[in-house]
Amino acid sequence: MSVLNFDNTNYRTGHYPLFLGDDLGMNDEINVTYPEIAKIKDLHMSQFWLPTEISFEDDRLDMKDAPVSESDVMILNLLAQHALDSLASRSIIELFGPLVSNTELHSWFLTQSFFEDIHASTYSKIMRNAFVNPNESLERGMTNLNVFNRTKVIGKVFNEMKQITGKYMSKELSKDNPEHVAYMKKHILKSVFTLYSLEQISFMASFACTFALSETGRYQGISKALGLIAVDEGLHAKGDLIVFKEMMKDPEYRTIFEENKHEYQEIFEAVTQQELDWAEYIFSEGRKVLGLNTPLLKEYVNYVASPCFANLGFEWNVERFGEIPSSNPLPFMDKHLDRDSVQTAPQEIQINNYRVGQLSDDLGNELLEF
Image (cartoon, rainbow, N blue to C red):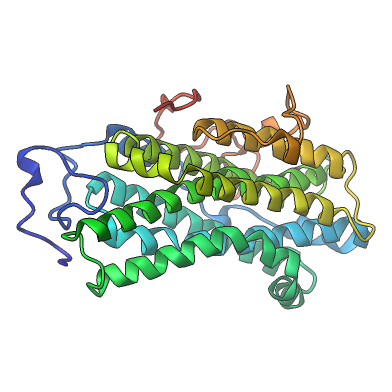
C-alpha cells in the first residue's frame, strides 16, 4: 500500500474505480470518472461556514429562563446530535479512505468529514456558550442510555468497517484475493448506505424539536446553527446516494446488494425505529414543546425516512411503522431546511445571501434510480 502510487496509470484510460483499485497516485481532477461526485463536492465547499459566525448569547438567556420541561428537550436533542456528529466526524475518511481508489470520491469523503467536524465543533460551542452547566450536560449525555442508543446501530456497522479497513491496511485482507474482495465490497456497500441513513434519517427528529422551539422566537442562534447543519446533512445524504447509485452500476456490487438486501433493509428499519423511540423518549418525563408532540414527531420521521427506503429499493414496513404521511406534518421545517434562509455571514445571522464561491445547485431533487 502506497501513500502516493507512481505506478497508478489509470489516467491513461481516464477510469478510476471507486474502491479497491490501484492505490491513488497524483491527485487527478483532469480525468474525472464520476462527475456527479465532483459536482456535489464543489457545491458543498461553496457553502463553507464556521460556528464562530454565530452568537449564542441570547440563547444562554433563553436557556436560563426556560422551564425545565422545555430546556430539557433542547439539551437532550443537542446531546444526541453531538454524539451522532462526533461519530460521523471521526468515521468517514478513516473508514473509507484507505480503500478508496478514485480522486473525486476521496475528495468527497474528505469534504464530508471536514463538515462533520465543523458540526461537532458547533455543538461544543453551543454547549459552552448557551448551556448553564456545560460540563454537567456533557456528563449527562455520556451516561444517558437513550443518547447512546441513538448511535448504536450505525456505530455497530462502522465498528465492523473499521476492523475490515484495519485488516486491509495490515494486509490480512488483500484486493488480490477474490474472496477477500467480495467480503470487503459487501461491507463497503453496507457502510455507504448506513452512512446515508445517518445523514438522512438520524438527525431529523432532533432537528424538528429544535426548530419547533425556535418558532416561539427563542433560541435563534441555536436554530440558525442547526439550520446550517441540517442543510449540510441534506447535501451529505445526496452525495452518499450518488455514490451508492454509481456502485450499483457495477454488476458485482449489484449482486452483493441483491444477495444481502434483507440484512441491509434491517439496518434501515433499525435506524428508523431508533428515531421513533426517541420521539417517545423526548416527550416523556414531562418534557414539552409548543406545537409538537410524539404522534406528530413520529409522523415526521416516517415522512423523511420513507423516501430513503424507496431510493434504495427497500419496501416500507407499514405494519411496523404505520402509513406514510401524504404531506409534510411539520410545514415549518421547510424554511429551516432551505439553504437560502439559513446561510450566514460573519456576525450577521439575518443576512441570507452570503456565499463563499457561490455555485448553483443543478443536481436536482429527483430520486436517484439505478
